[in-house]
Length: 491
Ligand code: SF4
Image 1: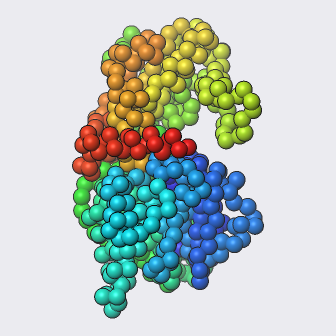
Image 2 (image 1 turned 90 degrees about the vertical axis):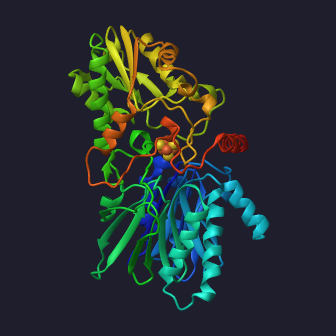
């Protein structure tokens, strides 16, 4: 999972792109990069958090009014400096590109590019493949179509990407002398929102980003979402063009609402915060139906993604919401002292229980999801250690049974607890007195109940095994799981 942003402005964009990276830091903390252009490309990128990568000196080199940024959380490729986005190529024009997602036919595309087109790929990143496909297609079209509108040439290049590339990809790109380009895969799996502001000359500035979390502070007004299969182009003069090139179902990732996005974001015209409130509400109704005799004394969220759902869950049940587990937010990428490595992996290192909130109480823990189950079990043990009378567990998301191949870094099927155990078995494994997962239809209802959205049905492949791009079979899944294991081993 990553965060991307692109800005066309009447003034220098570097500082605003830095703010985008800060506001999207939760989407990727492994690396960050910014590229801008005026008469040439300027780039700064590196490993770590934005504050570790950028400083006054290198930021001052990022001149220009058009630029793109990237927060990296690797789901494909290696972990070296060379894999940090944006990527760029000098032919044609000079193109820089960043993407959020994962190409499921990466291997086939990489083979085509290296063998058929005699291109050299310098990394294992699918972004490099996407960049070359885009650049090659543009390059092929330019001589024969030199009299055509440049937006039409762009549309042809992106149409051919939609025909060739499977998987999830939201893309920002800039082309020297031409402007800013964004597009989103035909199913709109990964998010991409848009905003505008009127600049000092009465003309418009434009922003595109994975989430709209930075719009307010930068003075941009939200203008909805980039639609699936849509391309938007802002030329050098600030004119904007858009076209939806293919019309397939709109299947955005449901996990953005469950876990990944910041609660203050609005994605695909649906508020993440409101959807989480509805998740808690729906689950509480179900809890009261299934466990009428198991009313908890307090509801404690596993901090902090589950906070919002736990709040409405407690409200709906009429019990007290408690921050009985304190999360130390300063535990991040600090250096590790000798002997500290093992302790740092433990939940005890990150969460501190408050005895007064727990002792002699029937405690319900609410989490957004259960992946491997080990963290959940450690939390339950901690609560027992602190004197909880009974421990219940409610999960805002249905069982995660299958891996994600669309850009969220999830374990392999063998490592997913719900991929291998029934709910009863998981209840036993967690050592809880009762466990309840959200029903799939209740989750979908929570996300799609309100708002002027265009969602047909969210992607829920990790929950129901239905990969929306129809791009999976056992052989492909094995191949992608092996690729992911190899990537991890390289780390
Ligand atoms: Fe999101 Fe799951 Fe679909 Fe991946 S498989 S895009 S995590 S809903």
